[in-house]
Image (tube, rainbow, N blue to C red; front, side, top):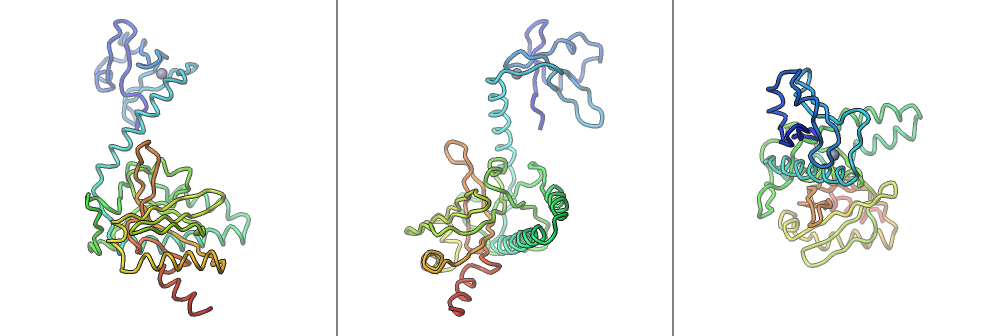
Length: 284
Ligand SMILES: [Zn+2]
């Protein structure tokens, strides 16, 4: 995504798009007098080479704070539109598989950090490699407006990229499915066919939102299971580590909200939530 799509020509104050600038000869005088449309800061045009043609800020020039904000907003908007074009829907089976894999990866990563010191570099390398560029992974657990998640779409083997994302980075993933991990906090809020689950990780909180559709896409008795989970955490100090596949959607202010679309999409201590509770019940 390029930051500047248009530039102002100082000679006549007309706006030129990258496409229009590309057609000009390299020595055209327009190219030597291009400005930011917001703050008039000087821009440099680069003809297509290894990458497509683009505009950059001229060395030594600084955009105004106001301009930075405007550009940021425009880019966020564009990102959002681009991502919502994606029609890929993750089925319940896929979400379950991804949540299990995410849990495993998270645990492996944690234990490798604990065991060796040099793993720190290899871990970050691993993360860099797996972290997709935003445009390439527009997966969403749910695409349809009624919020129904297909049980199984037969695409289990298909390669899906849902990175594990920390709370502070969620804003970059609005419009797609990601994995979030953490310890479930005892403050599980259970209402009538809606609920919240909070995950803690390195002093960061991620709130998972379960709505009417989540309950519709889950096995019967989810309310009771959540109440039981809460009771075990609060009363027995149950250490519930979870990985969830969530759909990151924007709230009215554009802040990221993590929607859990089905109970299949959350794994607790390596198991489907109710299985984890079942095991706990039998070991008490
Ligand atoms: Zn500017």
